Length: 274
Image (tube, rainbow, N blue to C red; front, side):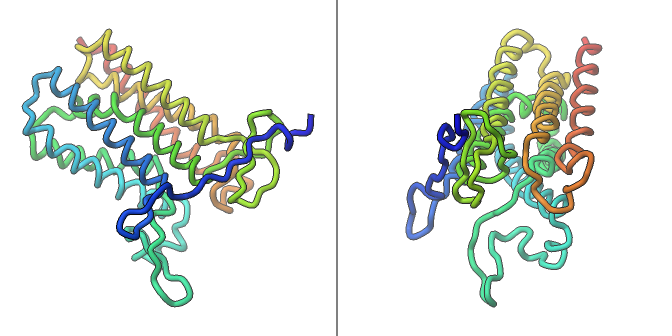
């Protein structure tokens, strides 16, 4: 069978609607839906632990800005350091200089590894304010993070970015916006489904081992499973930047290794802890 005839032609609109003249893009919509879903999951964990609601309220603020700033800086410094160090204003502001004038383009690059660093930094500030145990908060976010990660990758799919390598599998996607006319692996969809499966698994784990919240088990499980999958899915993904060509491991794999190790260490710590 000709793979092009059996492929899925993927060319969705970037924006489903506008508000007051500003386009609301699918990526931002997925990002916010994932964050809101994670918000309610953590709120449920806090309620189960009888943590005062006023201690929960600031968490959204610290996580939102920690993830956003960390993910943005991670992309800029891990994947395109030469450009962004020469254009630092474009690191944090969703604008770009085009033909001598500044244009609002939204955030064109967010890195999950940077997001992890950002959210941990935000957590350190949060626990300094609330005096809650670090591992308790980290586990609470570990339970909620996979659903957020799944929605972010769904947003990448809607943007036709972070695509896979060419393939002849019948579910290959022709990402029209990229200009690539052959079917490619929908790597974003693989990741989104995998992270959704991790979320379902961790909710089952939480139901059985609820008393383990605060030992690092849930944060470790999330880090280990998500970034192990991330490491292996990179083998069927197209390189994001030119300097990755010819590398034995690409940047995504290199950055995943310490997070997989950290996840394993947290799981082992939890199993040893009563």
